[in-house]
Length: 205
Image 1: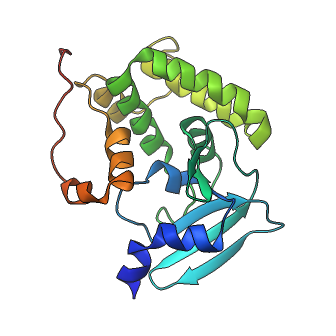
Image 2 (image 1 turned 135 degrees about the horizontal axis):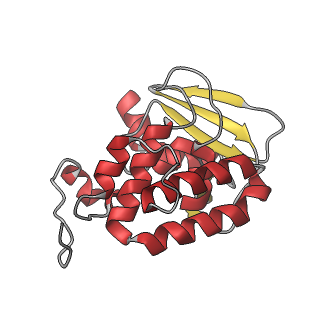
């Protein structure tokens, strides 16, 4: 039963939670193997947890779809500006049960983004996050995001960014996010989850 639920998790969300947003760490991890905790945000009065075999869906009160969020069936998936802000918000609990990734993991994701799509993409992300932050009440998180991006770009060398993220940012580029979204859109690629990704041609170390 656990496997059946996990294989049909998007059908389950579409049927039971239309109009919500697949948010926080779930949005940033989409395309990876289904985690035991799924996080949704929507127009609810209070947080609740719905338990299914092998998966707990955490329903969080908050804004529904915002500019930049991605429509998928009858719900949405947080766009990059939103999910980076969400993942920099305070969160409690054991790492595997938290609604957010650890800050170092967020920094690594941003480093991969820099590596795969360049400085302009990070600058655009920062601008979009600043515009979106008031609607999410995440202005402080927008400042933190700006500091991390500044640290990766070297414009704010005093910003504290992990060495692992800096190391990733200096490698040859490949686009992890596009690969994961492709696996969601086309299940036929699921078997390639562990296939090594080749650097994008035209770049040098």
